[in-house]
Amino acid sequence: MARNKKQEIASLRRELAGERLVPLNRLAGDSGTDDGERRHQLVWQNFRIKDCTSANAMVLGTEHPEFIEGQEAAAANTVDLFDSMELYPAGVVGVPLERLATVHGHYFGSGFEKTVGKKLRQFCIEKFEYDDRTKKVRLSAKLLNAMRKNEARDLIKEEHAHFKRYKEGLIEEREPVKPPPFALAAPQVAFDADHRPRYATTKMTPDELEERPMNAKGLGKGDYF
Image (tube, rainbow, N blue to C red; front, side, top):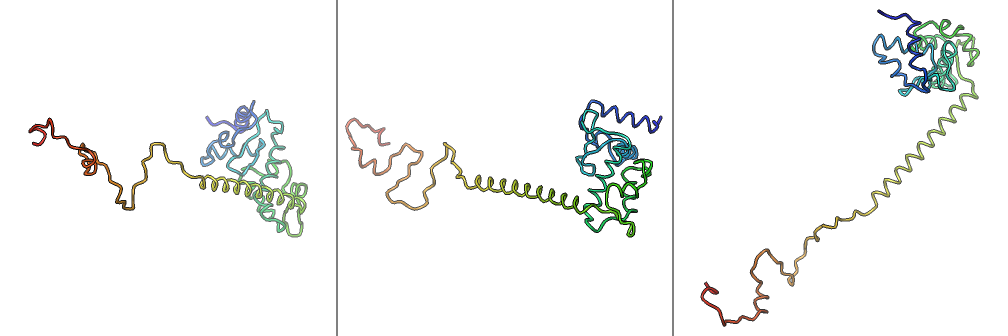
């Protein structure tokens, strides 16, 4: 029998008990199924999610010092969602209020006021800059500049790390490759008239025959035939 909403929320909280961080995908399951999508929405509505829009999203467990739940968690998740998904990419241009309502409904699966505890317009006035004439929401210039500086700093660190790995790779390529101790001598390419190769045979070379005196004494027929 299907459980009601309160039972499902209680089940999710039990899984967070005694934990600091729990991966969202592990807690809520596959968002591609109806049951998984519902559990994801319940997590968004009731528990705090860090890096909420990334593949590595983590849900704060009861042992985490920043653990919150209910509408307080939903409000914090909403700020992060709007910041990362809509307001920061839009910059000073801003995002229409209706667009934010659509995005929120997709992730939370419930009405804004019911989930967060206040109307969307009032929430945006309190948390962001809202232009009542254009009905658009945007981040404050100060916050936007601070976020861009942080992003630039992260990009510089990433570039330095990449260059360091690149230099280490060049050094490794420049190191001479030492031959193994059992390696054979290099083959002779140029012809050397003084060099006579030795073959796997018991016969002596002509030079060795000349250097070795022949003593006919004691030789029998078997030595010739």
